[in-house]
Length: 317
Length: 241
Image (cartoon, rainbow over all chains, first blue to last red; front, side, top):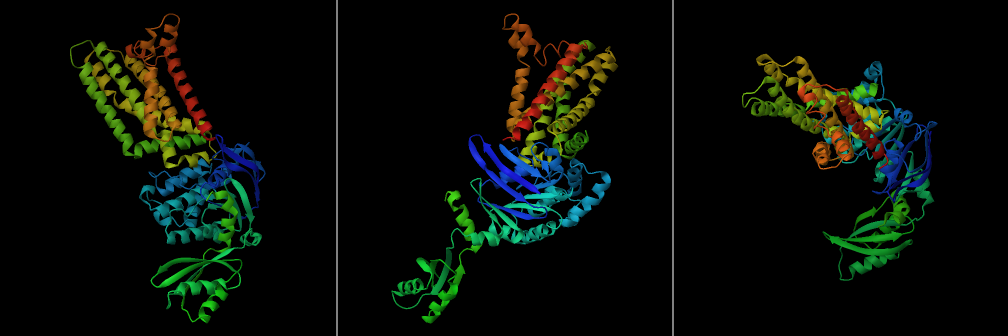
């Protein structure tokens, strides 16, 4: 179990984090969510014993991470935003080096290194020099070094950053598999990433914990239930067509605001602000007028909306 | 000890695997050979004098090579972010510094060993004692070790190797101007400041002329210890930043 109490970090006079407190149970997969500069990386670096906090306490499986960082480091695997690679080494030599640093004996290395290669699907490139690998493979080598000593806590800072869509799917699948053996802590500013991988979310805004819970809990907490919908209608006859559509949309129960958008290829776009799910009613209203409905999108998911609400006051924009 | 050995092996492997290590070694040997030719073999002189000139040129090259070898040790790790692997492993900052230092020292010692054909030539063609050669090489090893420690400290200060090089060279310059500076001072400061000098006095009137004194050995060991300690403390301090 990970217990964090009043953790804070100052860079000079500037507060980067805290005070924040939270707990993570064994086997949980928790997502650290926040905009860039929210303090996610600082929090993860402190948990990984890479950075010392300015205040607060961290206990990992009963071990004080500040008083006994070496003990905690044996139980942690950390993948920072930029993987900590020695590009002049081959993948297998690098993993051997990483496992030796973590104090693994020769016989354990011989067992764990193939396991790590298999878990990260690196078997084909095990003998390749890291500098010759693509970004996606390098990220996987970063994950492999983080799991080679079978840590109880695995910390991944923006693990899908810079990956292409195929690599992102592969990384997600890899993380899903890692969840079976490790407590996993992932940071990201991409909601879909976090919501698809994590059991629970911790939302950071300007260094403070502004929300915590499962996706469902966070969306139900909903500080604001506002939803935004984009509606696209094919341009019809008459100069006042745009005004007539806007009027019909505004008449839909729950819609509080209608904004005109750009016209693209004959499609007039409107953005609706509503206090409930209105897409069904909107489609009926358009069809009832015999207009052509070309587009109907929820602009953000409920979680995204909650995220924006939670960090909105802390984002500065 | 285990961690120190792991880091030592990796670091030494880096010097041997990368072209940089071989380029530095080749450049050092070329410059040493050219300087030996230019200063020691340019005119007729006694073999003892030739050997003195050899150690004189070698000391300058060794100091330079030590700085060049050491500036990458920590700065490169920071630049590549690989320092995170060391920082998040159960490895002390002391182990990191010692492992890296020893690897650079062994590589420097290998470069020094490869230059031995020059004093052997002097011995074969003149009258110099083996002990004079060995004492000279001990001095080169100690002065090289001290300047490696200076470079390692400079490397621990920054993520940019160029900045580390400038800092390392700056400290090195200061360390070899204490003696000329002391000449401008009145007693008792002249002696105190003069004693701090890393070349004049300790090398040129000691190891270079085949004189081995405990005082000179202790001086270089103390200088090495001081800058390695500063490097360890710098790494510790960086964890707060």
